[in-house]
Length: 393
Image 1: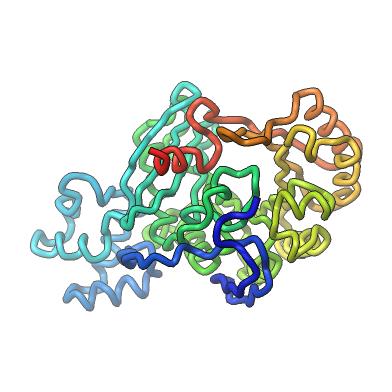
Image 2: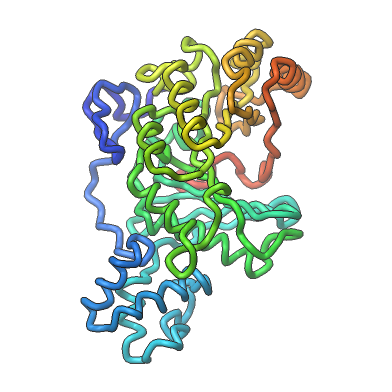
């Protein structure tokens, strides 16, 4: 299914690479939108110091503001948030908060599942765009899945977000705020049976992360830089997914970061993947996997191969065998995803016996394979469902 507005036209992403002649990928909507307010998280520490000096304040105020946001997890939307800046003179608090800690996202809907261990939030951004994030608590960790774009232009027909098309890229601050919001939730004990500290971030929410390359990389740095510059998470606990934007994968190699790369493959053969992941018409399976293996070789990090199990579409035994041959003896792990069907979709999850046989064949080929833990099915758990429902209403 081709999204509205798709076609053969030139398009340049934040990868800095020319992505011309790439069909079936939508551009952001052309409606003029107000610029996203500048936020502390958009800036590295040097730029923060310059910003506060320009406001007539000493440079060390940047460290104080950063400590409040990344260390104490200050919520700019809280009542009298400026008043919480108690180590800053009262006369300066409001001006600094307005300039560097604006409210970037407001919760529209918040839903809990799994006895309170899973929380999904639909956020409305300053211009009305909608994005989703999901915080998931486990006995030993807290993970948040965040969005990098409002909507998505990749056009994968089984994905609720892809069906809606691309609205716009998120700013670095808008991405980071989803992570910090999850850290606040965990710190407040809001995830049942889980630690009170966020430990992992996965970029598997709305959007194609590598299509918003510059802001994604800046967000990863903010998330992983030590306090007060950033949130202080380990890069090894950050996962960046992609449908296979080969030039961006190769650019990511040069960043010398240790994040996990996740490739949303969904089919081992080009004929089917052209349909399920339209970007495959530009970069074929072999090219995508070659870039992934180069990433693994440079970083020493195992690549996660994401594979949504779709009934009678990509779950045949011969496709499991083909995938096993492609991945055998590679630094890779397969993450099978039971499809969470969206309302009105013709796509459905594979039956459990079929799923188990798929797993068996991959493991027989020597490929480490797990089935993703399904969370939030009772709360429109598939990415994009909450946003679609809000737009529909």
